Image (cartoon, rainbow, N blue to C red; front, top):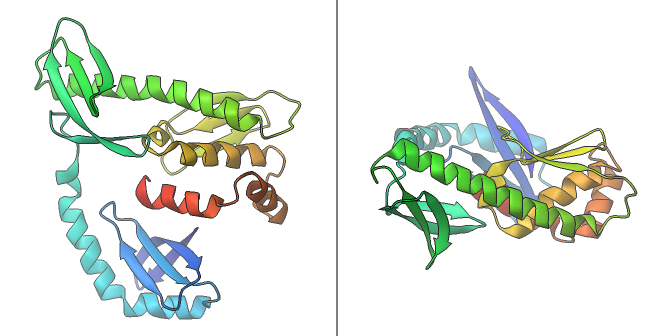
Length: 233
């Protein structure tokens, strides 16, 4: 999946291009306002641009429609809402008790709070802390597992840090950064991001050597990457 820019008059759109074995071109606008264009593997850039220009009115209409609901879909942090964790949706259940606590139980996220159950700000804080704790544990476990697939003779430090448009990053062969939002995605996606960044420890650029190494570690990395970016970003 590649990120591109489509310009039409004074308008500019960021979209993701997916080349695959198919006969037609399709355009998708997701509720998150992400634009995804799927096309045949050998489709020319000219044909893609022509398709986008023909679809411009439809594209604007879809974006306008989803913008109306974007703010309405913000989390309220109340009982009954669904939250993603490791690729699955869990309903939130809030109860007032004598000790703050959040845990997974009976297929739900149970949030125990010492405040009022309708204290959305406090509920959000408790849930955010829980996500952070789970990210620290899960990311650490998966990192150790994935690292065993590499024969690196140096140590790297794992850091969890919020990033706006990236799942992960690496710094000077010493640090790998993971976005805490990644805890919402399945473990196979977490493993992919860790593997991707570890491959950068050997090859800085996204060249053939890099992708050959990545494919040797995860044969279906493109499928996993698409699942991650289409569903969880």
